[in-house]
Length: 313
Image (tube, rainbow, N blue to C red):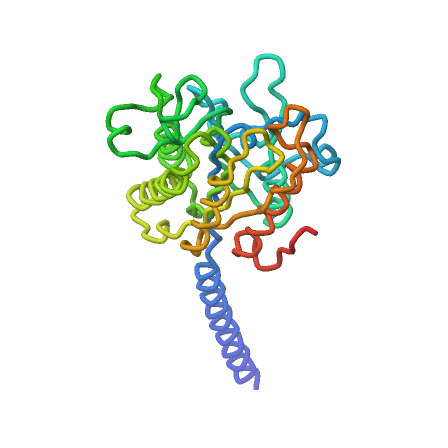
């Protein structure tokens, strides 16, 4: 009788052990199948209203109170990288007396990190007073031009040259090689944010072809760098120049809408009525915040902020 009971106990233990092994294998397979989402990367470029011209004391109260936790940025301007690789975001621009200033992107990043609740990365290159067209006046003779002949004859501002576009892509290159490619979960560049155009007002008729070339250049650079053809459709999000701006040009504005009509991955945010500071050039805090929220809302539409993200009214 006792022997029979022992045999039954042994059988039960074997079944229990077998169940534990099967359960362990199933959990391991589930864990392997549930891969961590790749890190989100945003690239940002433009002139002064992208670089930041609103004092940090005028940041929205919710940003001043909570600051940033997840947004990591690498920022370049003029002729050098202004951050120590990637660092936790806090807005600044290049100015010896008043570097603490922000642009619309500070608001977009804040809401993006509220939605994602995990680290994401920003690569930004910006400089005030800069044009695409080399026939226009541009700060220190630096340009965003994607003209092949001009690029072949010039080099990046990182090495003392005139090309902001080469500086931007060289910074992206460095960030990918030194940091992003080493992330265990991988990375994906999700969108290209841009505000620029005031300095191209004297060659407004050329802005359509000039900006189209810039966008194409960056997309093709990313395809070549990563081997991912999806970057030919990288979403490009920009805002118009306020019609109250003393450097407003109707041809520059029309070019944006024409590009959006032709390219389904090109998005324009209407800033025609945006209020400006007394210089009649730069967004007020309210205008910069509005553009930032609208850019974030577009990221929500594109699924960049996650499936559960909601737009900011």
